[in-house]
Image 1 (cartoon, helix red, strand yellow):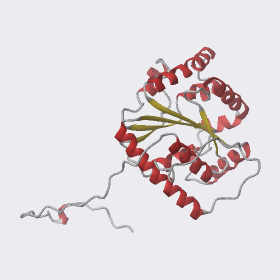
Image 2 (cartoon, rainbow, N blue to C red):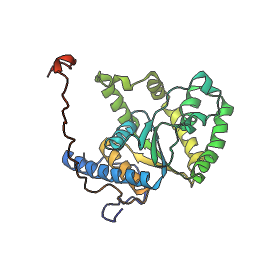
Image 3 (tube, helix red, strand yellow):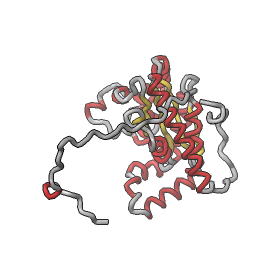
Image 4 (spheres, one colour):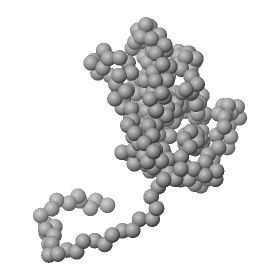
Length: 278
């Protein structure tokens, strides 16, 4: 990666007290397109070098995690960069070591895995909602830093993002989902209950940071008040975390098509076509 293309991200900006003006659509789309081109280069480098990359996305409900993940993966090869969003554990999985089912989704060489929520459910949702015992919660806080240090020692590049959004902005986004029938599926009963327990989740997040913001795998806080800025800032920072080079393929020459050599297509009347509704 050249100095001209490498994103500059030395520190995490504090949450702004004054809301900045909205980004102009043309500027946002141009910057996003540039960053997505760099992500393609990063993808090729990860695959070529056999790197193993894990990116965790945590934060408040409606903080914009899904939107960032969508923009990251939009132009990438799903065989190299995949998203994992594990659902509720089965009865069998509930009896396993907490990290066990997540280990199965870790990357092999040449892969990048984005976790849309992760093993940190045990530090947030589970204790607040009463889905785990106090002892299980305390054990997680003890073992999680060691688990992540072990991942890093094994050669995995572990990057953790926390999306921070204010009470007022979350309220606005929740109302927008309620008003839009195409977005109501995003509001699960768990989301609504977590909203009711805002303070408890805040306390759980503070405790989580206190125990798991370690040198080998620190938390990076994304100011998510403005979705577009959050997307650009997060992708830019992700690119800065790996010193990649452009390993994308050069010009590709399309070979000539094989001659028909007597091949006759079957008649269209023998095939079932999708109706031309539009």
